[in-house]
Image (cartoon, rainbow, N blue to C red; front, side, top):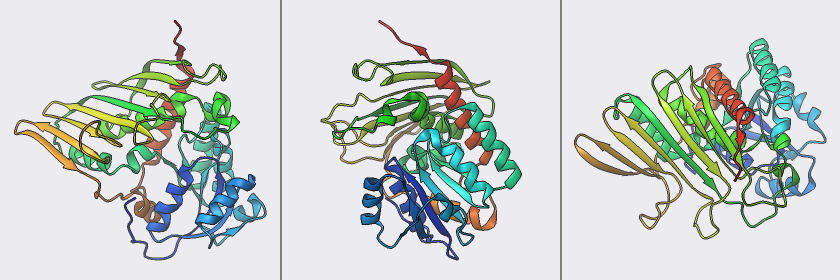
Length: 343
């Protein structure tokens, strides 16, 4: 992970909820920006033990309230069970703290409406960690190229988010769409947020969506493949996500992004270049001058330092608050509108 040390004064933060491993990325990006991890809490003893082995300087809290009522803390970060993230965010903001939560940032439109209302009332930050863009050096570089006009006007985006199930048993909530948010929210929120970032769209809508369960008969409610078609006035996006990546791939998934513009195109091979270059963060750019390749492994990741700055200066450099909410809303709507794919 790329690290930056640019925090002018110590920002104190705590962790509540460790149900997804993204919590380690979230903590590390804050630490890399100079913030201070003070306390942590999770009801699951095994998750707490793993966290404490990695961050022995952090102090365990007896309960959530011990963190919420600590006026010396500026921010809480969480990767709790998805269905519980929004309710926790409401408490965090109402206690005068900013909130960084793993995607998805909510699982129902009612949750999102409450989050929007409390965020507007309190003026606190409700940031969602969309790691496939914010934690991907190649994607950070690609967005900079697009914003500089390297491909002209973006007219189409295709996203592929294929993931491994992994060798360890997953917790019960993972297989329950009501608790996980469903496939198109849990994984597809990455792709939707990227569509908004690369196109600048404020009018996108879900044109079509489907999900299916094809490889987990023991979990009939669990969706392991799906796709979404997004449209706005001048741009179209298609993405597919799944839990079908074979065990032999030397990464947690084969995640790619394709951007087509009026003056060029980009392909991002985020995790692996099949039978090609080693490692991840490969960027290919085609324009009138030819084909260009960039190894983006050393591209800095600005999100952590920007978020620390936003907390201190009450700005929105790391993430536009309304676009964050819009991406969350579209992901929830995609899940709601998805038709089951049947044989």
